Image 1 (cartoon, one colour):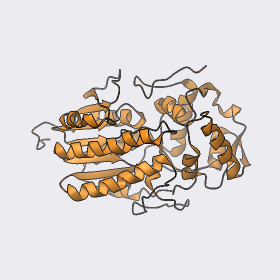
Image 2: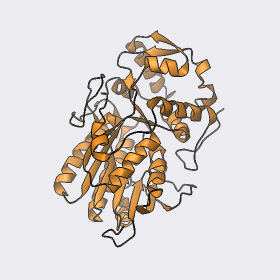
Image 3: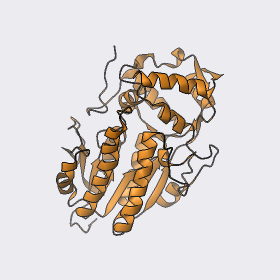
Image 4: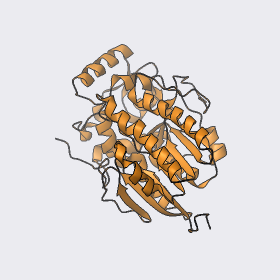
Length: 348
């Protein structure tokens, strides 16, 4: 199939290409016959080989990366922007420089290089607090985030930045993906380090060693296998669609489903008690996950993914429980990939 670029197939650039979502998106795009080549960008060069994929490095937190970034995007049919830095949670200025200012550099480089399509990784975390009941909120729900959590604050800010960007550049097709929590087996080392810390012993995260699941008010969230999310990104690159898309798989996860999954009993615990303990551990640098993110998770709305199904033609191939099982298996076995974010490490 001929494209206006004169090539047989699309040339796609993916930022944050070596993380949980990035590795799956690069593979999904590279496997599609309508994609000719994929350029994966990251802060560190991976030792990963994927057919039709090439790699390069760029640090989006640096103001002097703009010329280089524009050069890397020149001639691309689409850019998928996934790059995101979750830590250090104790220094939000660092994450702001990478996530917010870095994202704006990608947006402006895409316009400067005349890239016709921009697919941006937003999140359920961009949404304002909302109902936990199904069928959930659609894409019209307010995206003001939970302002006390840096992750939500940054995702929400970029929604406003994209609003302004679309007004300035109506010629660019902008897509915003708003998925729930994304899990896969080989991303377990990265996610363990993000939420539990690099010294959390993965082999001890076994169902038979978890005595109970806390039943907290508001503990209802949605999970999606990363490979299913990657397929939605692939469709967004190749199809003439615009706007936001919620992405989530059934069923909604709560304490009862977690207890069944882990073969553990449920214990009702006051939310304030859990938050106090988490806040103390975070202040002591014992865990990287902040109590502000804990507050946000208990307030995030349940998503309705009907628009992704009807407009994008997407639906997940795996259940939320299958995605969680893949993650747990990866945590216990130390599964990973040949990239810096996903490198499996022995603990102890």
